[in-house]
Length: 301
Length: 208
Image 1 (tube, rainbow over the protein chains, first blue to last red):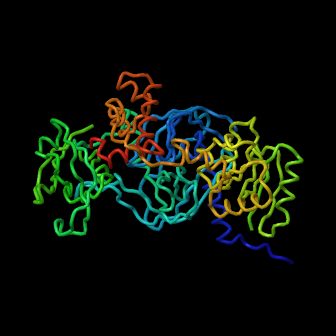
Image 2: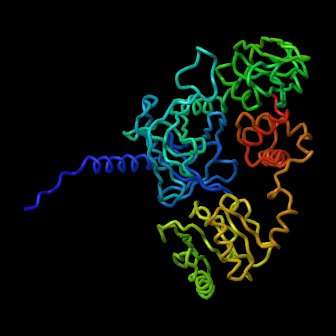
């Protein structure tokens, strides 16, 4: 008499994972971009979708391709390149919005990435939450919990997951898969929610404003006494801007904003987050070869 | 082992291309298909698509690139000027040959594409070099000569605004806004809106 073997733990785990993926995939659709590889988008709310900003180079002629074979035009509501989130408006029909997870994942928690670059064929990848990355540091001691923290996971490297969902073991949305997944990075749900809310109410994401144009230049390291090798040469100061009021002049070399080194324009852009609006920041500047400090009250734009 | 899917409208062409490839030990011909328009046809993702370009289907390579996002494309063209789906094909490794290509060229192109390389018939390569805005992404002096309007559009682009909103903020038509965005991207040599903003900031054109 043969004994029916008990289903193994592994087979149960496997079935569970497949079930979670299937449920998550129901909220993920394919975006057709003329002249570019397709990408995924997640239904955030009825009529509203989110995708990875970097994966959607143009605003024109974006089409939503649903698993039932139907096509719908999608229009860009707005973008937040810093969070790498793009918000779209389109008919989403019966597709269920993703269910948000209540909090950031614990490190080590199992995560699944679920994308759909071709309308009928989802893709999935498996990993754990590796760490939380602070990509754009807010001011020391004032960093709000979810802001500008990204989830770095060990999800297997494969192309085409951008714009997909990162879900937990319940299938709840931990984040949106954003930066090219070489780094397995996702924008957390709470940050996505902030971006969506700002785009919905203001039509755009707020940014702090300094009021300079600048170009990166090499700085001798005996001047900075750190490993910082470059700064930002101020080539323009907008009249009446926070920079002008702080006394910045053309020819200054900006080395740091508070304790954040400014080696290139990307780091300045990342520093000018919404949290910095209305705050006073200290600019470390090289003027005529001598260090100068300026206090600027950041504006909003 | 490299798997190859042949896409050609005519059975005789399919048979001919298959015959060229079947004796190569490192190549496996999956099947030959007339159109491959329906993704349900095959579940196996080929490494390389060998496509006899149908000039009547303007979006053929684009569609194929969507259906097989991970496949490299080897495309046979009637005339050099038929190679115009540059953006669509540029995402994946690909080869652009003419239809008079022989087995040696086709097999070499398939292997090169599978290895992640791009290859072109000399006649097609010649027009790539001369065509403005194609592979040459070198920014020109024009980068420092954004018009006043373009500078305004750039500032709004930096806020992640879509063309429609840029248009209404500046009191211009959406079509005009789109035109300015395209012009900014060309002048900066940027492949996307987001890249245009990053490049403009780096070159001191964007007020931060």
